[in-house]
Image: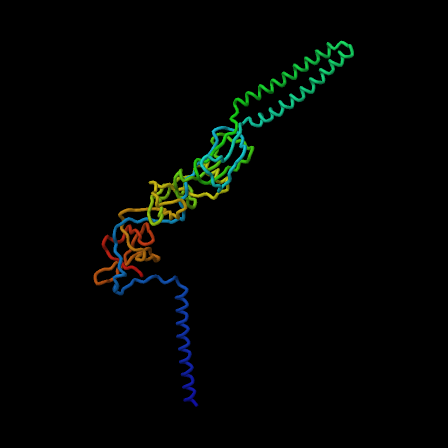
Length: 361
């Protein structure tokens, strides 16, 4: 029995030892998993593939952004040369127009007074005629009855003189305004095209000379690129712009939208678009409606030292690369990086031109 008890006790001790070992192993794994993420270790194996080698070389590098856009016909902003009241707007946004078609009409600033005077003069003439007939009838009635009608005649002459004076004053004012009246002043489409904006001011609204009323896009006014709106304060920070249309590059210039155009487009409830003009007019290979990829060169550096982006690693100590040394060994080298275009990245400090670095596939 003692021999059996001894074996049983030994087996129990063995189980406890194994359990303790398992517990220690589990705790070690648990503590390791709770620590900071494992950093990339230095790679000590030799390079075995030429595809894993990158060269430190000089070149130009740029940070690019791409925006969808389209080629549009240029537009001309139309306005009246005189102050006045909008008589009628004949077009709406999207309407096709031909060269010379009336888009809107303006009347004189005195239009309302002229119309009012016309009505008043006609009314005065009618009233004067009725009063004159009445007074003359009174005079004739007196004379027919053999009575002295001198007093009625004087009264008739005085009232007729007052009526004529009132009428002449109205007519003089009317004539003066009509002599200065611009009549109906029209603005017309500068060419065949379509209306891209119309003022929100309705008929009868008073506007001053030069106030934008409409915008018409035509083939005669050229072409430009229209894309997602970029505020002027943001655009001035970028290096340059160009468009790729039908596989060909075209340098562009950003054109800020003048405040009056911004106001008009906003009033017409049109979504704001950024305008880019061609630095040089494109040929027949570009047409209105063509898709254009606008490339924004946010930043650009020339003749700088670069390495492949995938060759640069980062850990808690900063950025580094593995420089390939003699014997295809990898030597960790701390680096200071700069601009990246997504494929290569500028290296300001840490490597020299011609050195090879490990590139992670």
